Amino acid sequence: MRKLLSVACTCIYFFSASIAMGESETDAAKMPQKIEFRDGANAEESRAISEALVEEVTSTFKYWFTESHFPYGPPSPSFCDSDPCLQHILFGIGLKVASLDLNGDQIDELIVTLEHTGICGMGGCKNYVLQTSPYGWKKIGSIFTDQELVASSAYSRGFRTIQFQSKYSDKIVKCAYEEDGYSC
Image (tube, one colour):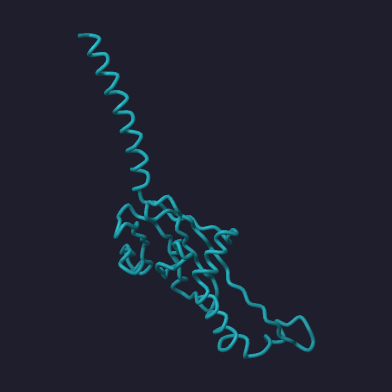
């Protein structure tokens, strides 16, 4: 009887330990997680951004070049470093990138913030959510804010909900994945 009890206890110990390890991995994946951005993109992320956000980048440049800054001539002489004051095409978009598996497929989605005066304002910038597919990278949503983003423990259509604290109220804004992408 003691031998049977010892074997049973050993089995229960290993079974419960394996369940506990599985639960901790599952629980960690289900915990709310601050989305950590870093400046710039690596080579793979750069390819993803160029595939998925070509329209956003080119339309930002077109607006800057044809309507916003460039057509109005060189900056005022007080900001000019040459005489006569001449203009050059100096255009840039800042990038912040975060990488996180939002749908549990073991492949990270990218969250990309394009930073430029033509697309950011008092309310923040657009944060684009990108996903890889057999046909390349595609945009699956955008979230406009300047607040910290959190991948919540809630899911919608297989993707984690992304949320942020509204800066105008105590409300938490939730961006859920719908049929055609993220929507807030």
